[in-house]
Length: 140
Image 1 (tube, rainbow, N blue to C red):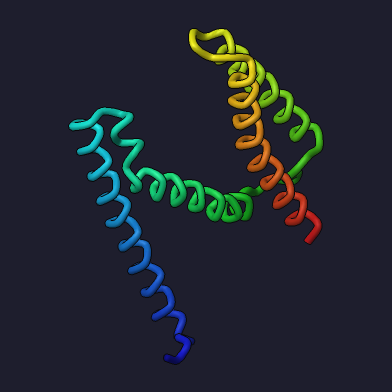
Image 2 (cartoon, rainbow, N blue to C red):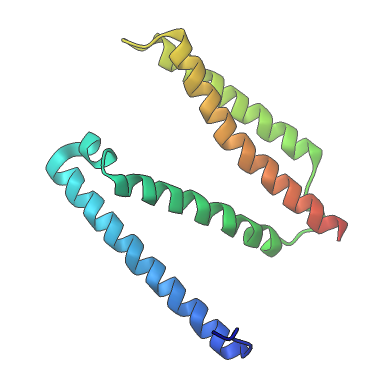
């Protein structure tokens, strides 16, 4: 199989991939919606398609982040102050959420710590990634 070199064909191929992705995502959402109606939220989450949907969504979000950073136009595209403010906000949210989890009925302090840590990590990683991309773009 030869590599496509014509830009029109490459663009057409990318459009077909996008349409395929949209149809696949709509099918997954339809199946998960059916599970939500018939088996409830827990039944929907136990479907393996839920994991596929979550992984696809997270991957798409990370891949589109670099495009968002390229599209961002401004004289100052990154700042350490903005990064510090972001870390302050996610720290407050993580601690608050972890505390509320730990004081809720049937949960322990360890579970609250785990929930807070997961929330912190899942928001800190994208924050650092966007900061890195913006810093790299301004250095170029």
